[in-house]
Length: 357
Image 1 (cartoon, rainbow, N blue to C red):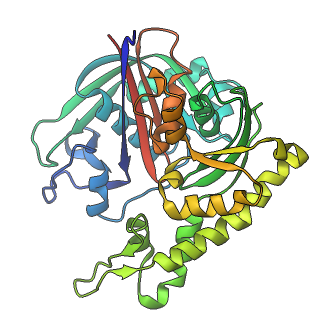
Image 2 (tube, one colour):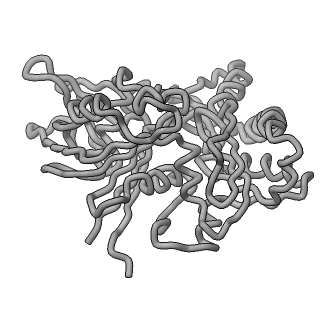
């Protein structure tokens, strides 16, 4: 019998906000992180509300020296845990080129004692506001981290592949990068390759639309529907679906040969491709990937669809965009402690929480 429940969520962007500025209402997927004391207090809106609060930041580096990355983690902790005191095991999804800074070795997941101490100091007391940025009351989330691990995104998603799948290619299509690995019986042998992600395609489309006075922010914010709405009140929505479709096809036609050739002749033995990440929710991305791999007689399936074919309680509620945080939970499930996994991401931040009954 299942003795736990798993919840997950996503937020987008971060922007600095004046604590005494205009009142802004925060939706349930947004929070204001409050830092400093007395007159030095400052606020940062994290979540979907940041998009309407100014020019939001979306690209982070996975290091504790990156203050926006730390703020996004704090926001995800608040949105998962709420106010009060909480004791948790925590998994953080990081880039492959920074994991050794936290663990001492690129193939290690457990935090060093120094890293654990640093994380406890950063996240022990998080001050925040919800619902209304001008609320007088500032809430507090006190976090006690019992266990801390760091997991690369591709390793985390690998853990979400159902055990029934013996061999598969995994393509993680994200905002910051596109990653590919080959999995045999749940193991990617620590081998993966990375190329540019959707941000590169977004920049290409934005550059092609400069003559239409369409900004990159407009393209970015309207990417999913391929409709850009400029800030000018007189500007009509601009449909860039043709440009988006063409650029995405060119993007994957360029990077997929480079990603797959690293495996040489062994690649032909993998007949199925699992696509995960935000790109798996984008029809233009899926069409481009299917078009490329169909010539190699490979079947394409999203990780969410795969988990429906092979259901298990640990993947209940898994979506394409949250596969990494679901997989990261498996690195900290050695106790009945409340488990939290966070991927601060480049485009969207994601988290999942597993609570035992």
